[in-house]
Image (cartoon, rainbow, N blue to C red; front, top):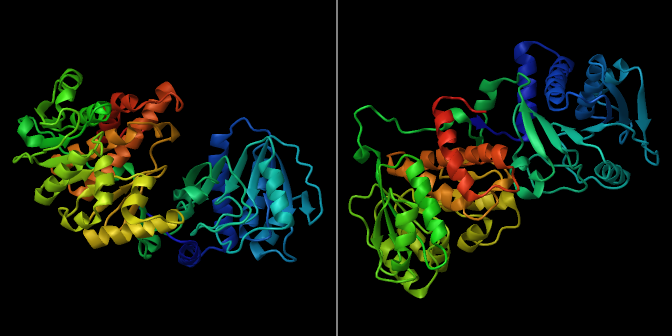
Amino acid sequence: MKKIISAAQTRATDSFTITKEGISSIDLMERASKRFVECFLELYPAVSSVCVFAGTGNNGGDGLAIARLLQRNGVDAQAYLVKYADSLSADCKSNFDRLDNCVVLKEGDHTGVNCELIIDAIFGSGLNRPVEGWLADLFDDINRSDVPVVSVDVPSGLFADSSGHGAVIRADDTITFQRPKRSFFVPETGRFTGKWHCVDIGLNEAFIEGQESDFYLIEASDVGLPKREKFSHKGNFGKVQLLAGSYGKMGAAILCAKAIMRSGAGLLTVHIPREGYTAMQVSVPEAMVTVDEGGEFISNPVVQSDASAICIGPGLGVNESTVHGLLQFLRSVEKPLVLDADALNILAQNPLLLKELPSKTVLTPHVGEFHRLFGECKDGFERLERAQQAAKKYDLVIVLKGAHTAVVDSERVVFNNTGNAGMATGGSGDVLAGIITALLGQGMAASEAALSGVYLHGLAGDYAAKKVGEVSLMASDLLESLPYSIDNVRKKKII
């Protein structure tokens, strides 16, 4: 698990690395620039002409070094020094002097860009004021260009640790150094990065791990999967109960049930309304079914005494009888719980029940459900802060779904980096709830089940997108790809 640190902590790590290794700052800049170029040429191996816009600080120094290194690799790289300050940082000046031809741009100058791709190295992660004026106009010209834009470390104009910003360059790719920045993970700012790629520039990892931070990035090696011994039987892998479905929403219950079985649960009992019986039995013959007295809605759920984990919510609906029945159920249950979809909406209408939930109950809200539960937030940073507060106050594990789903517990926020925009489709969340519940039912701790479930779910989405594309991806495609996701994590063959 990678610790995510602030811009100030990154600068401190730079200084420590320089002292520890006995190198100069220009040497570290050269190393970072080489790693950038290696990654860049893997992403764009056929590019022949590049315009590099470099600022007057150290990010600009990176850009000027990158232009020189690209020239050595046979790329026609034209450097432009965007002179927004009278003087250059020492390392930027050093790299400026090493270039044979660098065009200096000042206010009022016309860029005249004529290249296949733009590299943005105007401002780095240390920016602390909004970009405006003639620089904003330059950013607008770059954003309106018909060529790809690749940013160095962060898109210029973006703050590393907050959502505030003025004009920002919208990158197609961002090649960032050592660690992604916090602003990459929230929608208000993460939308500017395009696809980001993190390159190791050799900063001191022990120093990074010693920094205080609540934020982490999950890696494949962090994903836990229950072992399956030769003489195991179905009773060893959990007895899961699922309360789901209502008239017109049985598909959600079926998707969740299939995900539970695909994720290794030994036994599954699904409690559904009477009219969903045939659909469930035909679609998921592996599941046992108990039928509620309600025809179209669940109204009288009963706790399965030997359940090792219970999932409530997919397709449940918010019928009055369902609300009443669920409130009684939640007041009596002491099993490990996953609450999803309409269970969250019912909980939001009855917030006092938050105090009565079993310890480490897993909630899986999308942004709208989260706001209904815990109040409107102005941006992603406030939402994460409020999720941390709620997790601590009620001893919850909150899976805040989105482009970089965050698993929040009382100690940390862990972001996920698997998955893609094709997963923004109905039923995707039902599959995720099923995966987490299955892992929880097999004995994993709530936080670990949530982390592993989120990673596997996103990875299944990535495999599915390779097969059908993002636009055509459906939740059922996630179920088809889930076995490959699980198996490849087990075998450490992530592709």
